[in-house]
Length: 239
Image (tube, rainbow, N blue to C red):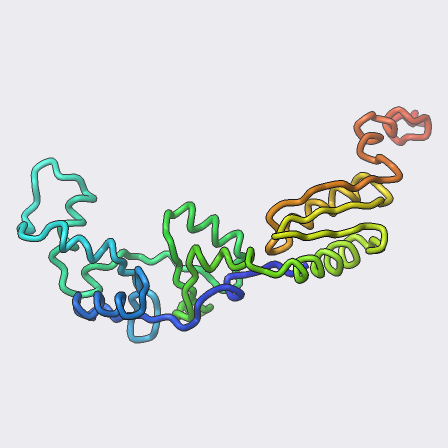
C-alpha cells in the first residue's frame, strides 16, 4: 500500500539565499514570494541555515539598543540581541537547519515538525543539496484527496491487495474523508486489520467500523482455548 512521502507534497519552486545576502534583500524576497522563511545555502546548494520573519524582526525589537551584553541576561536574549545587529542572512539565520529527505513519510515529517516546533523544513537530496521545501500546509494536502481516489485505494490496496478480501463482501463508503466499512469477512482479525490499514490510507479522516465476521478468532485466543485443548503442544506430556 502506497504511503505518501514528502516528495508527493513538497514545493519544488523554492527560493534560497546565500549567507552574504543583505538584510534588506531578504526582507524584499520574503515579501515578493509571500513566504515567511527561506533556506540559506552555500555555493554548492547545501543548506546551512534558515532565516525567518522572526529572525528579521529582532532588528525591530532591539532597534536603538547597543549590542553590549546585559548582566543576568538569558542566553536566548543575548542571541536575539546579536541577531538584531546582523546585516546578512548568515548573521540572522537559525543554524544548523533541520532538514528532511524527500522519501520521508508525511506522518514522520509531521512528527518532526511538531517535535522541533518548526513550520517548514528544507528538503535535501542524498548529497545534502536543497531540492524543495515542505510546510505544515503542504502536509495537509493528503486531506484534499477526492473521496473516489480514497475509496479506490481502500478497495485495491487494502481489501484486494493486502487482505485478499472480495470487494463485493465489503461495502466502502467515503464522504469527506470519513470511511464507513460495512460487510462480512471471515475472521475478527481480518476486520480489525482492515480498519487499521484503512485508517492509514492518505486522506482518511476517520473510519466507521460496521464490519461483522464469521469466526471470532480474537475471543478464542483470549479465552485460552488452545492452551487448554487436549491436543495443544503446551499440554502434551513428555514421553
